[in-house]
Image (cartoon, rainbow, N blue to C red; front, side, top):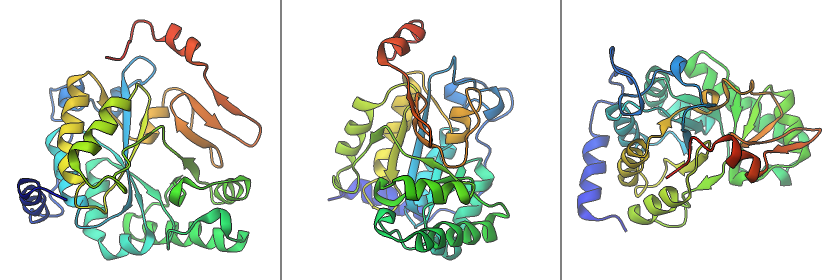
Length: 271
């Protein structure tokens, strides 16, 4: 249950202008506290984390965007196609803010249980719906429920979509308590992580300010998924990305061994 104070915070944020044009990186500022400009972020040497949000847009997306704007941070939003059409102004606000926008299907089915033609329909129809709002076909895709197999990966490849999974789950779909959501993220996050949250629940927006503020205080830079991989490898259609260190392709699963990662990052130890 949302506390009265948290509910008031969410309500006030939802009431704010939905498409205010704000800059995430004011001129003259640099570093995580100021929102490092995307072009300046090299996640090979910088502590990067990618926050991602599924199932939107909804009215609960608005306070999340307000937090990101205040903290000069960006995120990645995986959109349900019909909701993108319903909340066009929110999608355009995400786009203007520099957030990444991905495909999360039309009806949010468990794709592994569907025939190939239906999977193709879910991916391509949602991509077209999103493109009708943004003017750009998405290149990122997250399968509902995180359910994918070779059939889903092949469909994503054909649709020119990279499959983005996660390494940290807030479990906000189960724990409708802002403090539990904060704790799950902040105790599990590591450099290079992809964190999954949802902008469809009233209890998620109240947790986002603490998550963002604490990560920045720990020295993390919040980036989009494309920024996370920009200086290490180009995102490839059909490849499955779990975090900065782990990618699955049709040929192999390339996950860096923890001991090699620790040795390479010895000068960049997480708190």
